[in-house]
Image (cartoon, rainbow, N blue to C red; front, side, top):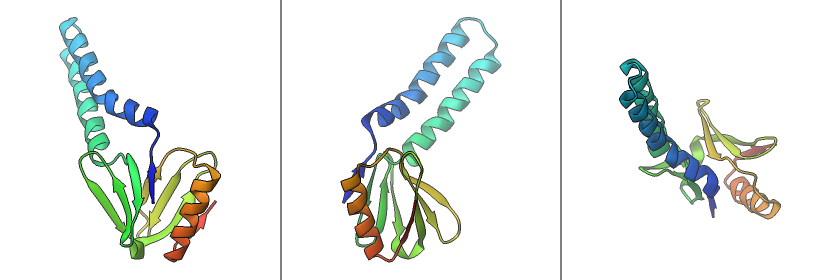
Length: 131
């Protein structure tokens, strides 16, 4: 089973770092302090790193665990390491590992059939669903 993040959210996440770099260039060429431009570049680089390595564009339920597919890597979380999965009040799913780490699986509201299918597959692996 594969769940995809919304296209709008993926597009906004991908466009933020280049837009921040463009803003830094405008600020720098406009004669504003180099520190301001440098700060914007730093924010762009940090947000770019998170978009590439930690923003899940989709998740896959596999026999080995849940795979968070990011742009630059696949993050596999084995079933044995998962403590529970929480459904947030308005939208999205958050995975909690046994050592307390929280991972956003998907940040959109799932329709009822998607959520029911997800719950069935996750509970079959012995993982608790909250919410």
